[in-house]
Image 1 (cartoon, helix red, strand yellow):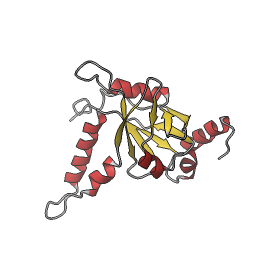
Image 2: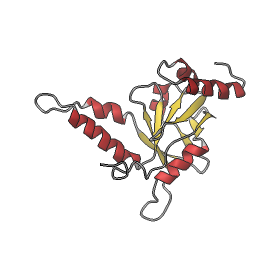
Image 3: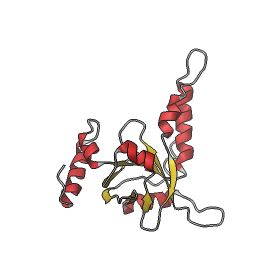
Image 4: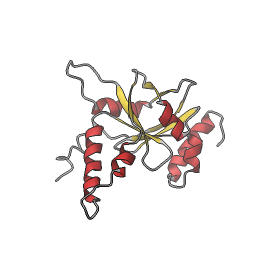
Length: 175
């Protein structure tokens, strides 16, 4: 099966990055390039209205969050189901933790025309996001990090860490 047949190539890719301030209520703005991809990947509802929602979830492995559009949910479910079926035990029982980890603590949240939304409290707590959120596009979704956590993460790339330091330095904050 080709990538076109599975719907991968007809989706916009999350490429971009940025640092955003988080207010005391958890409001933050998605960087413009990432927000544009959400809008491209989200079809209008049955009445032709824009559906301005983003899924925010805990990352399955890292101490950060991930964000993606509503239409990616179907693709994510298909991927997780395929992994479940590929990892059955001798009795054919699936590993239920595959979907538990892969779907995370996810919630669809509305965002406005400027990309502002409220980070759901539990995922925000899990990722340790307080005053700043660093966004990083990873094609199928984007990550949202506490900049300090990102810099201390042994599996994060060096360029991610340099970008977080750069943007925090622009705000006058050393990490």
